[in-house]
Amino acid sequence: MNLNKNYENLEQNYLFTTVAKKVQEYVAQNPDKKIIKLGIGDVTRPLCKSVIDAMHRAVDEMAVQETFKGYGPEQGYAFLREAIKKYYQSHGVALKIEEIFVSDGAKSDLGNILDLFDKDNTVLVPDPVYPVYVDTNIMAGRKIIFINANENNEFLPMPDESIQADLIYICSPNNPTGAVYTKSQLKCWVDYANKNNSIILFDSAYEAFIDDEEIPHSIYEIDGSKTCAVEICSFSKTAGFTGTRCGYTIVPMEIPNLNQMWLRRQSTKFNGVPYIVQRGAEAVFSKDGSEEIKQNLRYYQNNAKIISDTLTSCKIWHIGGKHSPYIWLKCPDSMTSWEFFDYLLNNIQVVGTPGAGFGKNGEGFFRLTSFGSEENTLEAMKRFKQLFG
Image 1 (cartoon, rainbow, N blue to C red):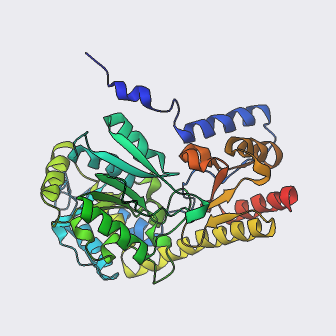
Image 2: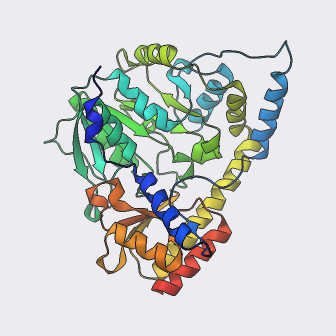
Image 3: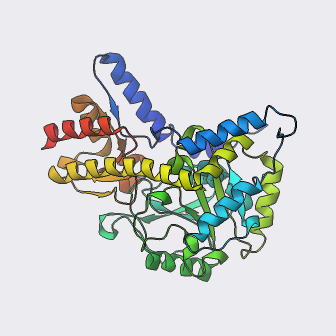
């Protein structure tokens, strides 16, 4: 028996595990201090009424012989896939129902989709980047190339013709920076991928936060994308499903073999998302559910504005927040990311995420999220003003 030695190449601790440990140690020594967490991107608003009502109805169905559900289709129930298809139509994107696969979340699919690709493929990821993109490929032993995202390109790197890559990760709106690609910018990436016979793994987990018709919600709004892009999305941030677990992945028929391979993979390794959860997800797209979801999104968007306005008043450089739940700021006084983390924790008991945990280009930067309560966000920004104003 031999273990997978690629695990030895991983960072010793997952970023958010280190953050949690530091906070626990501080709380143990300072039990009287109120900690405000604006770090990990977990939602705080409850599931909306339409979703809860749909889940309750589904629970009742499970108690009746005639409507009880056992194993469902691995690719998802038709009612949810049809709802997703109609949602894409609202953004001008036509999909076949066979191209839509329901999953237990974007994070799972981002890792699982790699089953379809040989380990000899070269992977291109932006730096800074969501750690899952890097770690899952390190586990598989793939070669990873980083493309620089920084202040000079507004943390939106563009294709480099001198780089050859087989798998390309793009997240827009971006985690951790909140930066968003325009249609013309994404067109450059699509053209690059098609020219190089590459596959784009497009993470659109935060598309619901986009508030501009000129910003694409889906990569499939870009001509040529269906021959080179797989899109992975989630109900976690859109509808508060972080504790309920549901997402979906689009695998176009136009990419040779990939759709059938993903169906085969899911049929073999995945038993599907629970019926009750899928009924709740379907309600997200209903008329009432859509409006209720928008109210929650506006709540988080208002928190982002509170944070952004405060940072502006404190003359702290930042991006994100407008089309994203994330605000990416430059650490004041040339502090490193972890120095700034400790500085905030020790002085005002506000917790964020050090940018260095997202890659070398994240050093000197810091991520805050708008997923806290309005009360806590206001209090945190009041403390910011006292410290930096």
